[in-house]
Image 1 (cartoon, rainbow, N blue to C red):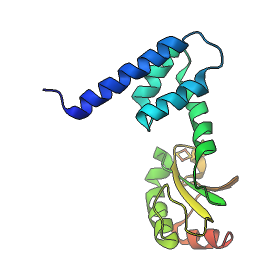
Image 2: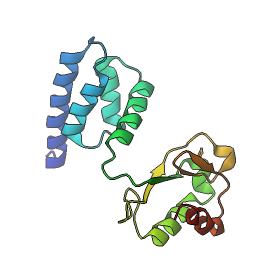
Image 3: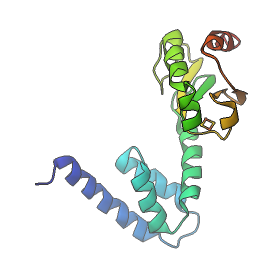
Image 4: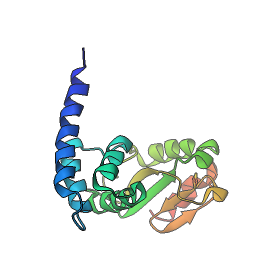
Length: 160
Ligand code: FES
C-alpha cells in the first residue's frame, strides 16, 4: 500500500507536470513556474528541481540560480544582518556546525530565524566557494574565513 504522504506527493507532481507541459518552450517563464511550484510544494527539493529542469528543458544550474535569488527576495523577515554559516563539506569538517550552535545560543535563535529586534538572521548555506578559508562565515557582503569558535563573539559584537 502506498503511504498517504507518497500519494499526496504524486498528486502534487502530477499538478506540476501539467504546469510544466503548458509552459514548455515559452520564453522567460522560469520564475513564474517556480512560484507556482513553490505554491504546490513549499520546498523545492532536488527531485522537484530536476523535474522542472527536464520539463522546461532548462539546465539545473540555471534553476538553482534563480531559486537562490528568489529565496533572498522572498525572505519574509530578514534581519538587518544576514549571517550565513557554510555547511559545505570543507567547512563542516572544520567545525562549522559548532559555530552555528554557538551563534544560536548567543543570539537565542535557530537557523532560519531572525532576532526579535530584527537585527540578525541566521542561515546555513551551501559551499560558498571559499573552501580554502573553511570554516566560512558571512555577514551580508562580509566574508570571515578560518573562523575560530573563540572569534564568534567578537565578530558578532561588531554588528551589535
Ligand atoms: S565548503 Fe564552505 S566554502 Fe566551500
